Image (cartoon, rainbow, N blue to C red):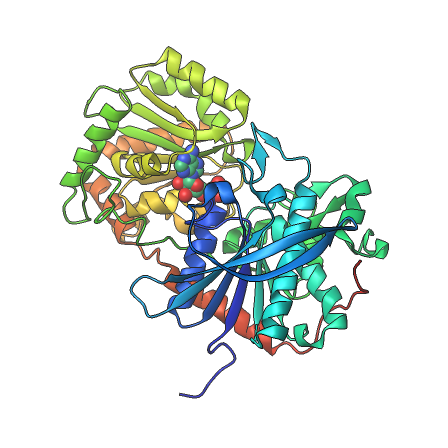
Length: 510
Ligand code: ADP
């Protein structure tokens, strides 16, 4: 077979979180699973993460490099610690490099503590990005490695694209590296007061309309969108939505001005960690042909959360309690829901006013609502398995993972038709039921009434056991693997490599 431009790539991933090292949300799942899937396809993958020491079990790691980087004109010592992970089922290895600088990363949280962002987040992720570039430079120049793609994720690593363009002026060896920025959530842009721009060390000419300036502030994601060679997001529908004022969070114009557009590649799931046939977090395992284990999971979940073990529909909510996720719509219809024969389990953490409202709801309906405020990975698995329906009323949803896990676990998702929710859940309709492809329920308006109507329809169909069973099995049998998505990324990397030259050159950095 002839070689093509995407054979045997070396992809360097830079991210602020990745499973199994550090996680606050779906970003970590995606970075971890995509890195593994690429390695399985035979590509070389180097993953760069901040060394959040408090989140890491002590391990034997080799110090691969030590250097200092400048943040706001002050030199900071960084050590790069290296670890190799064998990719399950394969002969391949994934290299993980931790950017260690304890004053910035050895903290209790990744980005915040007690619901407040760390005030020095720009310093922290400027340091991380500059260290990523320095590490890349060491690999290319000292270790003589060839790097094809620097794949960046979200605002925390977006500045890498800007630094690469600036540094490749001085270092020829960096010029052939292409950058892809994947936006996992446009709602988080890394915006900081304008006077902090000097911390980046970038020339002041870049604090401008065509650079990082955004209504007088510094916008890291904007810089990444402008200076990356390609931009992608995590579903085709979200890729279209973010070009509109409704979903573009102020960056729709910047995104639309990219001549190469914005690609949308839907996330897969980690099929080893999320598999009801082997999931060790569950009291019983099960598969699409025999759901008896799912019934055990439901009963045990009811017990675990102090609910009566009744045979009523069990509705679930898992996720960050933020305005984005639309859980306030659910709170608005609680009185109507609580008048019905059902139970509700909620696992989440986030905005304190939403946490308070869920606490009050639990107090009012202690026998019907099971509430856990906090982050609990094992419980998330047990809720996915033990529930009948998962509710995701998101105002916007770049891709969403919880509904993908629900599909795999035979828990029927009820979702707002937006972003990745629209792309991954096939709505119940006579035609989709007939063709056997329906996997869940959609509603369109971000309103309590529309959500209530969708839930009422789902509860009605739940009683028609054969139809419900076909919804459950279609979801469980859907192809949610990373294989296809990883191949789409490889295709994108390959096309990027074929693009000659750089799209923009920058003056040096301080
Ligand atoms: P987002 O990345 O916007 O938070 P996603 O649906 O893409 O939303 O991914 C959320 C991920 O985080 C899923 O793996 C979900 O199971 C997990 N998750 C969210 N909240 C919690 C929680 N409180 N406890 C455990 N896991 C959680």
